[in-house]
Image 1 (cartoon, rainbow, N blue to C red):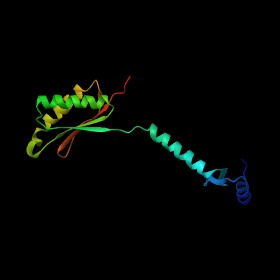
Image 2 (image 1 turned 120 degrees about the vertical axis):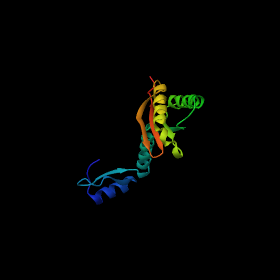
Image 3 (image 1 turned 60 degrees about the vertical axis):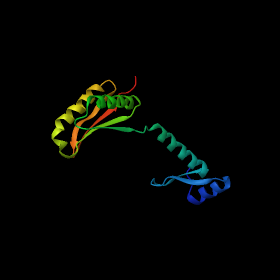
Image 4 (image 1 turned 90 degrees about the vertical axis):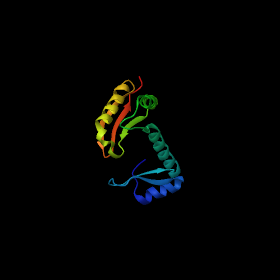
Length: 146
């Protein structure tokens, strides 16, 4: 692959039955290659597909509590949270305060911290409980499988 002036490069590409493809238009002089354009596009798509396959999709599962969630409901939701973390999903646990229940925000925080402590073997806390409007949210990321 040598550097050809434009007309010479085009005539050489036509003679070979291939296409003249501009690889780097910003270079001085622009870099071109004589290749089959359809094959070039195919290779580009193949590279993009491989890159996309390697990137992991992050799944976020949500668990909702009330500020005065009783023990049985807590245990049930905790088991679901364990399952989500074992499956490799991130967990978004939140306490939703309805109406005047916002006065129990300490109970909500205690509930989320207790959940974090109970799930310590399965995941690590990414964000501690934080009050945003009428919700107190906490994020837990799964621990890497060894």
